[in-house]
Length: 339
Picture 1 (cartoon, rainbow, N blue to C red):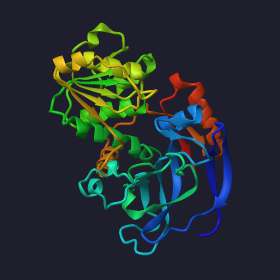
Picture 2 (tube, rainbow, N blue to C red):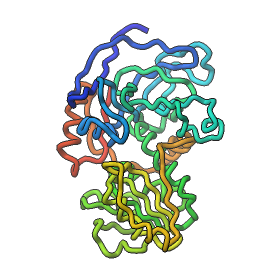
Picture 3 (tube, rainbow, N blue to C red):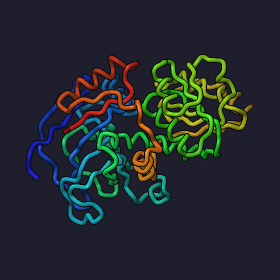
């Protein structure tokens, strides 16, 4: 295929710019996806703002983005399950398929995984991207391409629920009411969770949590949060929030770390964890849940009301990033559309 492929690059000096490149040709086993919509992830914002996240550092210009939907524009040799024109979402963690983790079903732990938009790997903020067929999932006509861009963060939420081994009717505390927190709240309910409690310092986010099904909503300092949850999910990516999780959990409960704490290190009161005999479980992206994410989005078990707060055209992608940094309290999820 010939034509122009607009690509958004982020450099080490925190600059975003659109460049024009050639449209890639899909290799054997790959499909070419014409991107329709991209969600801006919190990790994208951190790379833009801080230049690093955890062990990943922006040293050379790369293309951010990994929450993408689109349509199949071309098919590589040997592809059998997809056709041109299919509406799809992309699973951005490209695992090897051969190591013990891939063969054991935990391919998110593959040591050779190539994750789109983890510097220096290019992501999906462009017009076209070539992806292996096995990491592309079709979506029904009932699901808009804009809402479909939420499939990746929904996958994080579904995987977190799976990792928690949640009993039906459990009481869940969801710390953080950003996109991942709100989607974890809805996934918790969809999977049979009982009483849901949202926690966030921003009042308008707590209002959205209640709109999406939380029976109660509190700011982090509220004394009502002590010993309240069978399962406590941390989605804020805050070291302070992580340190406070264990006081919120009931004896014998489970604490699930989804957010990546700022600074990586957290001072914990291990005595509380041991006294309550808590399970402390971490989440590293997702595995084997994209089908579920698409299904739950399509049949509205995962409601998205209030989550997408802003939309920008691709040519204003840099402005979208700047808006997110400058207006965090007014922003939940920004979608950049390539229409």
